Length: 110
Ligand SMILES: [Cu+2]
Image (cartoon, rainbow, N blue to C red; front, side, top):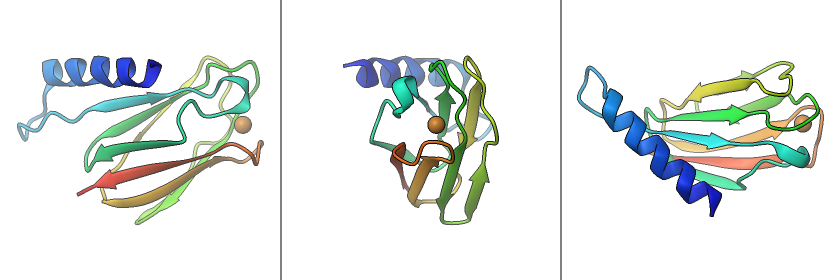
C-alpha cells in the first residue's frame, strides 16, 4: 500500500534530520491525483507535518479547519507541494475549495 510506504520513508527521513527539541517529527505525504486525496484519513502526532502534493493534472485549493487552525492554501498548481504543520491535537477537516467531493480528515494525537 502506498501510504504505508510513504509513511515509512517519511519517518526515516525525519529521524535523520531530527529537531532541536530531540523529538523527531514525522512527515506524511498526501497526493491529490484524479481529484481525490490519496488518503481519507491520516493519523499523526502534534508537531508532525502533512505535505499535500498536487500530483494531479488540475489545480486544487486545500482548506483545513480544526482546533486553532483555519488554513487556505490558495491555488495549488500541478506539481506543487503545500506543507502544513499541526501544532495542536484534535480532528482537522481538509477539503478542496474547487472540488467539493475532495475531503479527508487529519487526526492529530497529543
Ligand atoms: Cu481540488
